[in-house]
Structure formats: structure tokens, C-alpha cells
Image 1 (cartoon, rainbow, N blue to C red):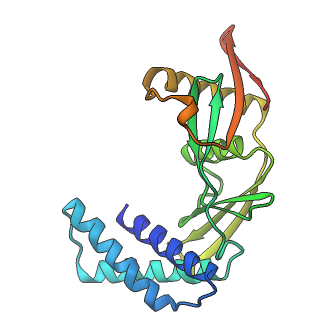
Image 2 (spheres, one colour; image 1 turned 180 degrees about the vertical axis):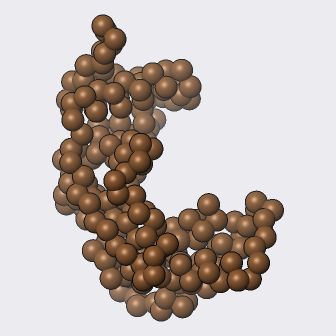
Length: 206
């Protein structure tokens, strides 16, 4: 988790500086990543030997270099959207990047192709929140040297997948969600309707 946090912070910082028209060195960003990594370890009460620390920071540096060469370099993060189900349950969804026009991206610093069930659910929720956007998964596999970049265009969820995901989200939201006043929430919203019956869920497309 500490390594992932360091990578996320470093990529975010590098992308921010690139959007400002600046060209920071990977070395300078690595120094910030090292500080984030150390803070995360301190917070967890964990220490690692110098050789392991150096190996992890070398991976962080390699991911930064791969990111800087990729199509997502410098792209901003989209505003969080709310998947609103039956005007009762809201699910927040925010992928890592978007081009602001027609494509969203999720980044992983490991090989996530094909996506495991938890990642697949996360990606489908992003697709529900951005239904008119093409969804792309970008993997920078930090466990390979040099880092291998894998790009996967995600097919739209099937009707059955949408029904299952929305039905599950609705059920969990009703049972465990926090009460909030809808008028006080910021959008954008993507509206869905779910009705349960005969052991299945039916979905009304947005």
C-alpha cells in the first residue's frame, strides 16, 4: 500500500507539473515519492531494510518514466460523478484520468489484464458513471524491467452486468449507506432505475 501511495502521488505531481508546461526531472519527482513512501511506512509503524527500499523506489522511478511516455501523461483527473439509483442510492465514481471529450482512463501499476473481479467491478462502475465515454485500462507493470505498458479498451458492460452491478450497489447502499440530502450533493449525476423481482434485477438505461 505504501508503494502504491508513493506511485499515485508521484504520477499526480508529475502530471500536474506537465499541465503547467513544466518539465520536471524524474529524479526530482522520485524525491517527493520517497518522502510519501516514508510517511506511509511511518504511519503504519513499518520499516524496511535499505535494499528493499531502494528496490521499491527504483520501481517507482520506472513507472514514472513509462507514464511520461504514455498517452495519459499530463491528463487531468475528471470530477467525481454520482451513479444515482432510484433517486435513493448514490455511488461516487472517479477514474484516474480523462481527455475531457470522449475517453476515460484507469491506471494500474501492475498487470491487471485480464481484470480480476474486484478490478472489473471498479471499471464497470466507472463506465456506468461515464456511459458515453470510451474506457481504457492502462497498466504499467512495475514488476518487470523495463516496465511493460499494457493498454486495453474495455467493452461496454452487458445488460446483465449492469443489472447485477446496479442491483448490488442498490442493496448495499440501502443497508449500509450514509444518509445525505440529495439537493446538497454535487453532480454530475447519471440516473439509473432498478426494480427487483423473480430473483433478478431489471435496469432502465440512463
